Length: 354
Image (tube, rainbow, N blue to C red; front, side, top):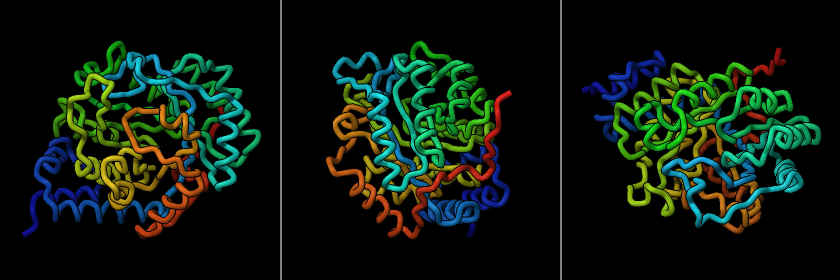
């Protein structure tokens, strides 16, 4: 007999929408056989929109300074144990050269919220990258900025901006982000999208106090906002944060959220995140099988990579080309095709600012 969960999943696959209450029901009642159905339908939806391609992005973590005190993050300014670093423009460009030689056509520049990198510095770096590598896409993941700053980066050539909303519930957001504004986070996301970026949002699975209702609210928010990219990963507790005594988020629940997201937003760009591979050996593969179609190998110099601890992770001293070969092998063994091109969202058309 077909269960209610299976019926809801099938409806979601067909219509790409469910109510918050229906999503809560799935999250609370899904069992193994229904998970297989969910993942199979998410996989089919991804293939209908992007085929078997998995887009690779070259991640460059260029600063671990951050002025924020987010309760779950190892980069928080209150973490005095963290050794800090900033890459110079020349070091960032060297990472780009290395990535370009490896075939990457997207570079993701990620940092904490570091005011040292003014608009003048960042636009110079972005412009230099676009001048030297005119066929690449530049993605930024640098936090909350003013609308004028977002416009400056876009005019300099940035194509995408990732800003996870972290949680769609104001009460939980306020609790985990002292001194930050839930409303401003939403406004930043709106500004990014209006400017013309391929906009990215996303959330953490397993935050303290998070319920199925809150997870469903995240999914409903994403459906309404319709970002081009969505990052979803499990909480991994860091020993130098206020959440050090909590449990890690569930990989299984994260995969369920990924698959539900794929069915809600069929053409979204959806990463299989690093955090999945930290918690389980086949995390990357699991994410792909749940509907993800983006992977971001790290191009950051190894010594600095060790210091960029949003959460504790395993760091390999291997050269990037060997790490990349392992990732490519994993993707191909899972039955997918590696694509190092720009991998833009299907709807993307860059426009000029007025």
